[in-house]
Image (cartoon, rainbow, N blue to C red):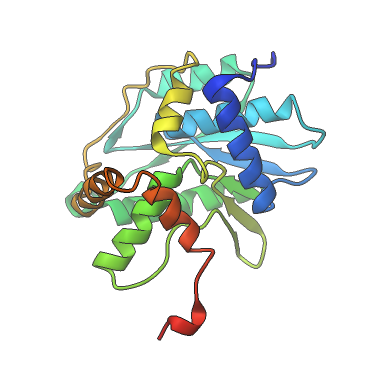
Amino acid sequence: MEKVNLKGVAKYCYKAMGKAIADYHMLSEGDRILVAVSGGKDSLSLLKLFQMRKTRIPIDFEIVACFVDTNFIHVDRDVLVDYFKSCGIECVVKDLMLDEDNINCFWCSWNRRKLLFETAREFNCNKLALGHNMDDIVETILMNFFFRGEIGTSPPALDLFEGEIKVIRPLCYIQKKEVLNFASEFPFPDTHYECDYGKDSSREYVKKMIHDLEKECPFVKKNIFRALRRVKQGYLL
């Protein structure tokens, strides 16, 4: 793979991902990482950034792209697999069929994650990389706070199953708009990604609220994200 010239948004995202990797110890010598690729811009950008990192850093690691094909998220499977092959990326496709009468975002996510864990074990991967960006993490914080009465989110790194698998989110320092700008710099395939159940009303409500807050405080997303590492325990119940 040829080195991508690091400039502009490509340089920014590459460095932001590198800082997240360093801050949360996401990458080690000999890692074999299962990268969950949905066909959307976030996961394709994550895959590309991992490829860029392989050509630049003195750490030997492997990546395996995994696409979970479901009966309610519409993605051109052949286009995506052809893209993996054209990039020389090892890939695996798993099928997930769920009862559409009882589907919701939580149930879909739970089942997809379970299948990804099983696939990581099958392909001897010790890490699972997900394409959640800063917006996703901040929105989840507020959704849990407002609608579930708890403080928590999707952490940048989390050891599971007694350390057998580590879930990592290397895009955690990168905002959605920056991911989209990054994706526009590369000829990613048009997978015609569309989810029949993708509009979570509570998430859309939180998105709008953050958007409105940004008019008064442009750094609101970064402030919410940073707050999770600056918890004043003495002022909690």
